[in-house]
Length: 444
Image (cartoon, rainbow, N blue to C red; front, side, top):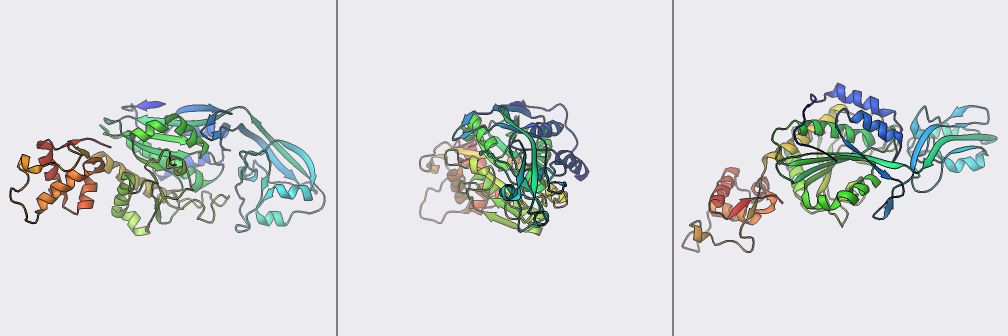
């Protein structure tokens, strides 16, 4: 794993033109859970994030899962009874069902049709289908093309692919800070030509990495992971899960962030985690998010890799800011999820939100009470009235709020929000309690 304290060279921030150019270079590559398309994608992305690249061998067991065989494709097509070649892999890599085994056979329509996939709701789009863990093969077509295929005669099926022992590829990098407490950004790279559902995450991760790497005297440590969805995060948790449980301050899944629609925030499984409070606070103050609308959702156990990070054994404080929720926009998992659908300005708006999140994390502080069992007797320090029975002043209430929320889990901004007491009064109380030795600086 690459750890970087002070990067020697920081590229200039990426504008829309640079993001679009990176998108174009990544777009046509044939990605899946494994294979050369993933490695080629990392070669390109490495120009923007110097990931440390890891390979996990096929057959390795990780929790209840096994790393699959490596899959690579050179060509694939169907030949109709009248000699036309259709569903060409080289025309659109979505035409071939993911992890299709090699094939060169002639079949009648009656045997072929069970291996053809269409989307009745999107008649002009090629659906995205996979068969990762069961040997199979298939082709994906638009419904309109499927409807016009002859039902008589033989079809030739040609798939030049390989399924063999190899490895799963993932990349990570850590930018060290003063504190060992970590902010985690995870995205995935395992889909072929899909825009919002695949490339918006790695593009956003590149933007965030460039911003964080340029911060001087970072207080917190930042960890970035790019891996195949599901199995990749499971592999990573197998290696680093206990470390993340001990050190994660806040975590984020970067997925489906590029549609010109409202912001959706999916909370972590932890009820009211620091991540959730932070994101909701920033979204509520962000001008763009307010203009297009904000939807806040509680955690649910389907979606992207938050399913793994928020599984009961880890229960990490990982949430996800999206613009276009997986499975809820019509173009999802089809060829209609393309560059025309993606909005690069919308993606930049999400980046601006993450910049605000990072800035707040870096400027915020956490404290711990030196007397966590019951409230301390403030009178010993001259901080409490000698005569009881009177209604407490705002200053006394502020002291009580700070003491109670100095648990290493609530930040100063949390205390202000929850207490509804002005920030300057809370800051004054913090100074008084620090001087009296009642609280001390210390994160979760």
